[in-house]
Amino acid sequence: MPEGDAVWRTARRLHTALAGSALAGADLRVPALATRDLAGRRTLEVVPRGKHLLHRLEGGLTLHSHLRMDGSWRLLTVTTGAGVTPDHPATRRHTVRAVLWTDSALAVGDSLGMLDLVRTADEARVVGHLGPDLLDLAFDRDEALSNLVRQPGRPVAEALLDQRNLAGIGTIYASEPLFEHRISPWTPVGALSRHELGSVVDTARLWMVRSCRLGPTVPMTALARGPADGWLPGHYRVFGRRGRDCPRCGATITEQPIGEAPRERVISFCPTCQPTP
Image (cartoon, rainbow, N blue to C red; front, side):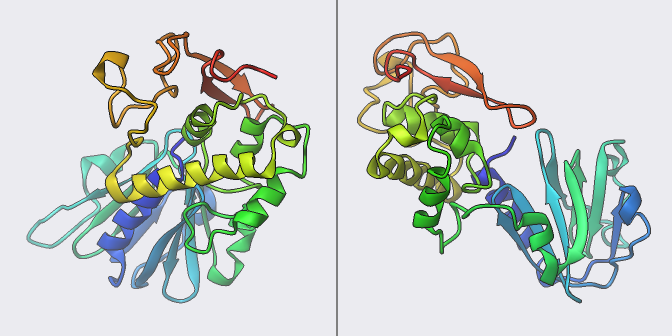
């Protein structure tokens, strides 16, 4: 599932291409929206909220989408003598759920996990359950930490992944900061000091902001000693490296599911650097 930084970059691309322009047309391929006509409405802005996208339109409407596991928004430039039209091979896939176009851009929402049209004033209906957004300039760190400690017996990785506590963290930004601070994903939240928990959140936020600015890379830290360790800048140290050597201690990195369905996720960790309490 795309994480907060990837959704932020998607929102920025859509905003750059569509903001200020009137929609020439919109094809919303979900039954509840199939007859809605958005043509002529100007895009005001496209903004992220955690892992959600809010496409705000003139007239007080918001097109809300969530990418879930496999979704994406693709931007295509189709120049013809008559301008942009939705007649493009990318729009013909049976998994496409939304097609938006202006005089200069074509946006295709494929395999979207959610697609809703709500009044902008009622956006809380679709994102009001989310905790503080790590990529919000006004991120409320104290509220996020207070949310995390409400269930002191909960494994810390599971709590970090719960978007009701704080929004934007997925398995990458749960796995990597916990490895950075040598904390087992199964450590109960209540066993960590507020300073320890805050350090994990601060690291996740720092790396997500850096990813938004510089691209999806994990920054080099003092723990990385060079190519001999099998880890280079831009490569994750535990995420997606099951069965490979830990770049810090040489033990074998493993992955295990955490949480209960439907929120179960797979977390990556080093069992030696991050011993289960």
